[in-house]
Every structure is written in structure tokens, then in C-alpha cells.
Length: 245
Image (cartoon, rainbow, N blue to C red; front, side, top):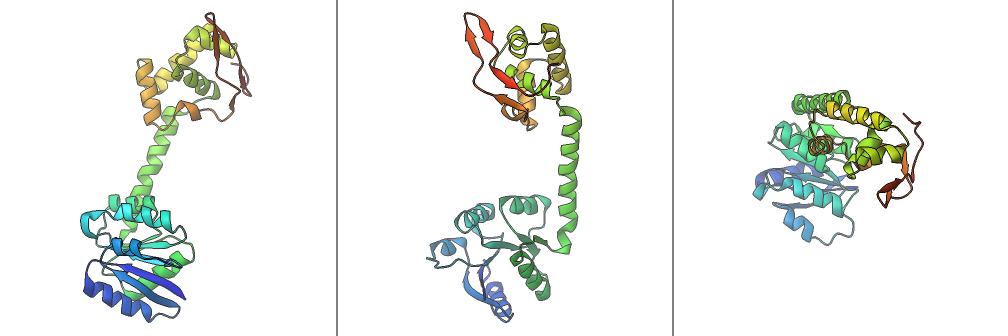
């Protein structure tokens, strides 16, 4: 028997949902409340299998509620039941940990189908919001494609960016990587062009905003320890599996 909890601000909707869902074989509504506060105050021996959550709850803190539910009861599924159908709300709910999203005004068979789907480990969205889901997906795909086209770094460029971020000068980088100063300058100029930057500060800022933090740029780079400075010299203690440029 699957346990369902209903968090719905409107009592008539909440009570109606409770009666209808309880008629479905294998489902029981063990808890219902107008706000999530009551849900979190419960001393659950076993938490609900599914929480039907109204995103129109007071103070509009539904996203925080989703995160808190998943933090407390990771296995509990969350089905958003709401009037909010904007792309922003839908994407935010799924990012926070929602398992399904369905609009008020849906039919009872659709609601039961949604609950069964998320219990089976699948995500569920009602047909009415599919255009928003697809639109959001395409935006992300385009953004990733643009980033790959503009910021696709070679392994050596990734190494160089890491050292630039650490504050090393061209000569120090050349000594560390055992390459010529001219090669360093060429790679540096390429980095500036790829990130459309005219100085180091802009280069690092744009790289970070693009989701390319220097510490994660090169998966093939193995750092045994920090590059050591001694009497103005640089000891090349950085081990790299990549071939020299």
C-alpha cells in the first residue's frame, strides 16, 4: 500500500483529492495539510511514498520545500500539483528535486497515471506543459553548443589557463611546462581570442562564468604538488600525461 501525503492550500481541493485518490487500489492518503510546516512536524515512522505538493502554498516558498523534502526523505517522490505553468517555475521545480509536474484541472486518470509513473522511478509532466519543457531543453542545448564552439580548449590551453589563474608569468609557465616562451605566448593569445578577453582578469572572469573553472579544465592533468618558487626560479614538479606542444 503506497502512502500519499497532500499539501494543498484549498481545503475543498485537498479533501476532494484525498477521497478520489483513496479509492484507487494500492493507494492510501495518510496525511493532508494546508502547508508544509505540518508535514515537517510529523514524527514519521515511515515517510510518505508520494507527496502531492501545491506550488501555490503560502509565501511562495515551494522550491525550498521541495529541497527540504528531498533532504529529509530522499526516497519520497514529489508530484507538483499547481496552476503555475511558466517555464521558469517548471524548470526550477525539477532542479530542486521534483519528480513530476501536473496542472490543476487535469483529469483523475491523468493524476493517478502521474503518481504511478513517478512511483515506478520515471519523471512525469502533463501534456499541457510539454512545450515549456521542450523550450527549456532547447535553450540549454543551444547554450552548451555555443560554449563548446567558443570555449573548446585543448589540453595545453587548459594547462596554461590553470597556471595563469595561479598567477604565474609567461616565463615561469614556459619553464614549468618545458616549452618555449613563444609557445606560451601563442597559447595565451589563443585563449584571449577564444574567450574574447583583452586582459587576464577578463579572461579568468569569462572562463569562470562559462563554467570552466581553472581547477577542472584538464582531466588529463595530474598535479603532484604546487609549483615551487625558489630564488626566482620555478621547479617543474607538475606531472602531465599530455605531450609537449
